[in-house]
Image 1 (cartoon, rainbow, N blue to C red):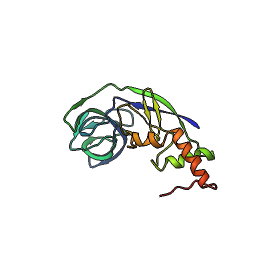
Image 2: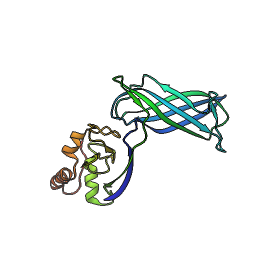
Image 3: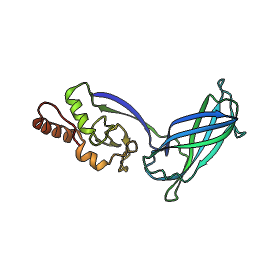
Image 4: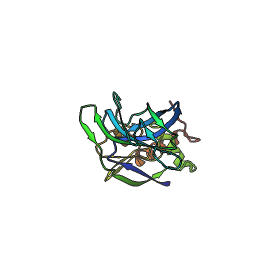
Amino acid sequence: MIKRENMVDYHAYIRINDIHVRCKHGNLLLSIDLNNISGRAIKQATFVMHAVSANEQPVLLDGQESLTFTLSDLKLEAAMRMSTPFRCAVEGAPAGIEIETESVVFADGDQGPKQRPHKKLYFYDALDPERAKEKECQEYLQRFSDRALCFAEKRNDGWLCTCGRLNRSRDDFCMECLADRKELFAHCTKEAVKAKVRKERGRFPFSLKRRG
């Protein structure tokens, strides 16, 4: 096994994965790659954006040092990932851009105001593909998720998905890969996987083949 560490923010609504930037004729053209990590469907999100130059001086966006903008009609389901465009005027050449989620509106109309981060560092044991037995277990887990790295595991502060994400106890689906908690704990715990692999090794003594 390989010990790995990760961090989650239980108070976050949206995670910004990446921002692709182009400047053209005084306009800033953005493609914002984001994930809904709130556990609830989101229909609207408000962000605050700052930009700085290479010497870390503020770059004006639509004439402002701090630009607030809202994305509506998102239809962003729990754990869903999407990329959305945004355009604004820019004065100068930004070398760095920072975007923070200010608030959200959920699909049922509830408001989600800005919250202080509640970051939690955690560790998990990842399977080592260099070891034959652990590789067999990982190949079996990948029938349920191509991103499987470890066994599903119940914890006092939530549950660990096979992708390595620590989810809250109330989450029925993984906020990272959308895996179903019930299915994972029926088939992807350490005990369940090892029993299944032993059984299949008896049926296929030379190698464990992925089927389907």
